[in-house]
Image 1 (tube, rainbow, N blue to C red):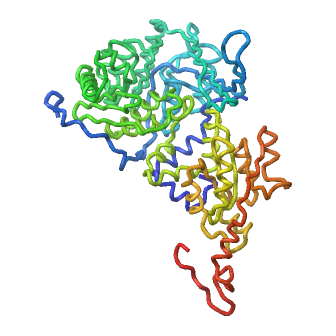
Image 2 (cartoon, rainbow, N blue to C red):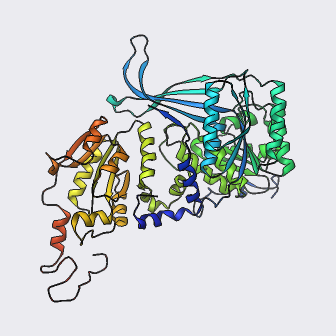
Length: 562
């Protein structure tokens, strides 16, 4: 976590040894392209109360080999602004300013597994076209094994193109306007099926577990599914399935676990999932009839319900949060629940962590990889939750890219903020009103000493950062080590740069950069008579120097927390 004060780094490493490994994987990978008890005898009293998060943590995983079977898709995102209605039809005109291409569905699962340190291999098919070549190149860059990724000249690569726009004049956030799908959902040929079955059997011999992402686009035929499930059973490795929407789940009989959503479960069981009793009935029915070890039903706003063959059921509620986009949530559940189950974590613990990861996902626009760091931050105790606002330069860049995709304007200000006072609050409040997201750059202890003298700072950077992060108006705090803010401003690329009005007529660090990229500078009104220097002078007794000494006397140590 380069760029953070050492004291802050040590505090935030509490997520465990696993996090360092994940960060190394994540930074190295170009994930996307950007251009501009038997069940019959158990009574209802056996049902667990909501599974708590207390004590949960991501385990220290070895790099597990995971075979991922399912349709790989090229997800294309066109981002832009909507400023007018077309004269040709009553539709918005999207002025595109950015294009992104990412692997979707089973491809997204594999990219997520790589970010978590696993070694995924693909069992799928792409077309002999430009989009298929792009997916193969992305997988190569990610380190996904593609021995069983077939190229079929008779099928196009599946592409989902989403158009997302923001209406800045109405202060509206980004929303999806249209999705265009290109696909051939007919079953693969018999020859292709036989070839994939042979490849599947070869890959299973190398795998620690299997994940199946079934969106019913012709790849996962009943014969291929049976080959995968029986092959995993012969090797005694877990196989977890995110099923298709169908009346008949018998094609998954013998799998380790299923992760159907509410609608898929209702369709397959005929049970309306209106309350916890119905959740339990449906989950237990699927476990019993399909000979599963577990069934995890995802219930959108209601959380998840888990039934196990040999254990009590568990209900995992959602954590209240703003929902922006449900894209990718099911894939995140399969990734986390599946990987953790393959690693040997209990089903309830794996489900609770998967539920938390999916909750993070729906708070983001588009399918976004959820890292171990994201999960570790979400697992922090509620009373320490503000500390997740303290980020490194690298983490800030990732977070702000996500904020921009959501159409939010970034405001930035910086300073020492040594002894927080009413004058600081005035500037920060003004800065927050200029944009949708407020980033505060905080000078490190070394930088403050260079700027203010050897007796400063009064408070170390770790404490100053925590105080700022505790303010609701601030979204991110980043510590930087230079006396000038140019580098951190370039990293943040704000839309609005805020300084105090005492900078009027002066050249401000980062001003040229911000204005060259279409941003602006705003000068905040000052609260007269408020400054840290004046506050320190009032606190320090007359005749005592910056080291706490009177002339001819020994050092006077300040009282703790003074």
